[in-house]
Amino acid sequence: MDRLGSFSNDPSDKPPCRGCSSYLMEPYIKCAECGPPPFFLCLQCFTRGFEYKKHQSDHTYEIMTSDFPVLDPSWTAQEEMALLEAVMDCGFGNWQDVANQMCTKTKEECEKHYMKHFINNPLFASTLLNLKQAEEAKTTDTAIPFHSTDDPPRPTFDSLLSRDMAGYMPARADFIEEFDNYAEWDLRDIDFVEDDSDILHALKMAVVDIYHSRLKERQRRKKIIRDHGLINLRKFQLEFELRREIKRLQEYRTAGITNFCSARTYDHLKKTREEERLKRTMLSEVLQYIQDSSACQQWLRRQADIDSGLSPSIPMASNSGRRSAPPLNLTGLPGTEKLNEKEKELCQMVRLVPGAYLEYKSALLNECNKQGGLRLAQARALIKIDVNKTRKIYDFLIREGYITKA
Image (tube, rainbow, N blue to C red):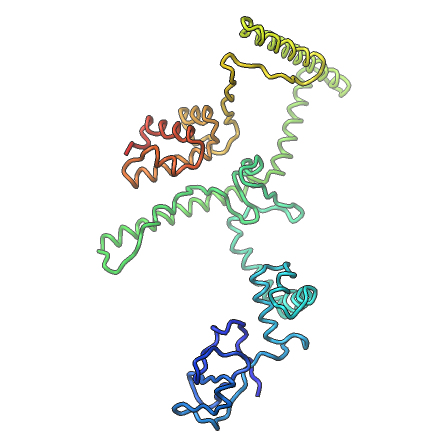
């Protein structure tokens, strides 16, 4: 009689034939009288009447096969398992790839059957609901909530929006760089072995306890961010707009303006004053080029563009022939509050955001402590950025006593 055999398509997942030791291919035979362990034979050995120890050729037997319907008359159990494995390999929704892997069903048949029996099947509804509730309970302490009508922003790495969100990834309820990001480094070389002394074992356990306390602090900070919605940009953008409008109205009231008609006149006069101030500023700029006729000509053409309402088309050339980039403005950048004045000055001159500097600093400190010293070549191998920036960071950390030369 037919029995439900192994669903797997991989013959190596089935036990070998006791007669010829080959991998079993469905259908195959199982002795109903021998076992445990079960006694399996391929069809060739079964037809030869193979006998072994207590197994006799006249024993009753079962035919093991999955060539029968389970959920749908047109789908065999083997095809059901092949569909599940194909979806797992190719990903949900990639129905053409799933059909190509199965070979026996079309793209439309695979999609229709999977949606009907494994997604919309009432038998699985309670199970899926329990899984969803368990997943929500697991992430409730860490995820930053967004309303159901919101589409959580998914900024690309190193974008302005990603920086404003402190590297938060709503879809993963995680940050690109966590608080105390290198806490796991202290555990990477710990290995508990049987011949550890009591003192050594206690020391290792203490390191693990310290690590757990650092993880708790990380979770505490995440909870504060979640409870107060500190990176929900839509909320803060609305708040920013309201604050800016209130400040503008307060400026009108201070100037004695009580209606919007007077406010428009005030804004026009204010813009005119700003343009006049800009002209005076540009006039003072030309004084530094007074000895350079070419620079003066450039300034005059630039001034003419501004007077005619056009944007300046010719940048002013510096005396050195190359104008250096201005210092980086650290206002509002995440991590600025963690820097001292000297570190802020370094980040401004090197044009390095505080978050990246702190990460590089932590990596160099850990490597220095591990090696007992650090060479410039090691620093450059560890930090994959411009070599000149790496040298300035390395020299600064040496000068301030954070690291030592090897």
